[in-house]
Length: 211
Image 1 (cartoon, rainbow, N blue to C red):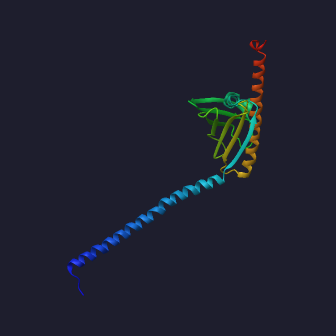
Image 2 (cartoon, rainbow, N blue to C red):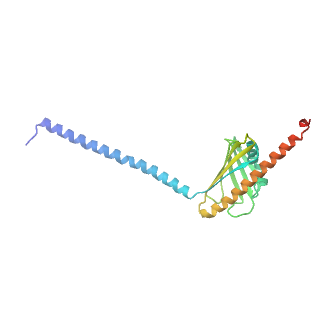
């Protein structure tokens, strides 16, 4: 049975339309998983990176105002007095609130003799972020967070360090990281409280304060 030429053209157009629509649908359908796969790969890579990180967080209270603790943390030339593993420390460059320092370290395991660190003081005195630019590990970053408590006379300090070990075993790095952090907490607490106590005592005995 032959179709009228008009009907034949209509049928061909319908077939072509359905075919093209199906092709477009398939192309659109196939393009979505491609984008999704890229996102999934990135998420998986980040998740894998986090699993290999060594991270340590300490929360403690210092009996001194936040400004005093901030001054202790940002007085970079005094770092050798503050952190016993540092032999010398100097500021090499300042770019606004970004401070670059060079530290000569005492001989010790996992520590490169000369280290360069970038410090971000942008959100001071609430937050001090630092990042090691070289060393034996793939990456090392730290954050000091300072919050006034007890009417501003004390400071709640949170210190977080995150290390991507690279070829060094994560368990070994974690042990070393905890030791470093405990030293830092003790030193910052002692230095800040001593400075504040001496400053307060000096003010109390100043001539203007005598009756």
